[in-house]
Length: 392
Image (cartoon, rainbow, N blue to C red; front, side):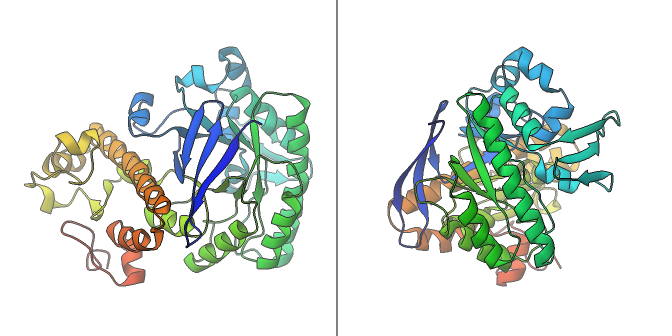
């Protein structure tokens, strides 16, 4: 088997701690996968990513297909020697990127027709070409090509996209089975915010020999409550002995909520994207380091964090770097944020193993609160954190 999921324990809340066994090592879950879209990370080198504790990362099939292209990965023997990463890799299929394209795209039963933003050449991303690209990349986990739509789409439109996703999933599975590369393939449960469609999608896909299941089509327009409800419903309908992956989510609070609902795997660009904008995730709340209040602060970014940035540098220095738009500042915040996400998943796992996730969930949810969380929960958290007054 390409990957094997070992369920170690389930907390009374339903939160799960497991181990994802891959050909490039065993990965404790819950796990957050940092996103290296273009076989690279925003501001970070491979050794820095590894030093955060990350054992599996995500790369993007759509972007890598366009540049550098399938020939490059065949020449280098896959993404690991190409980018010098010895951990595991999950590749998404490109479905979300197609959804995100401007109007110049056409979805047919054959696949997604579009123009490359690099050279304006005509391209076709089909279930078969997506699998061929992912096999050249040689990731540990491949994703089926799905039809991603706005989660507020009506039931008829959502059903149409879901049923095409199912047909494409079976084509992806057939393409994968033509060549034994030792890679795993995950299916993607769709159905928008329609409970009956989510149930139908899970029921259909779990009849087939996929190695794991993702929950797709969320974080694309639905409300926070709808996301929680659909995540819980989809997770509950998936096999206990297969990994569950919530795609493209999200903030630290999103992870806490999804783990509570039985999800094992996550990815998101938020840690590095927010770092670029001067935001640091800490266990005292979200910190906007460019604020003048930090100019004279000799405290670390997060006194509970053991990342290289928190061990060596002050908030005052980081404020100087970010307010002066020095690139090294974004790099340092990225190191910290990716490390913070790893710390968060370790804390969640430890609590699940002790059977005390309910308590940890409450404590961590307040500790990592973001401005959006604060608005929703009417909370204010520790000194230096973003407060309700600051976000309006």
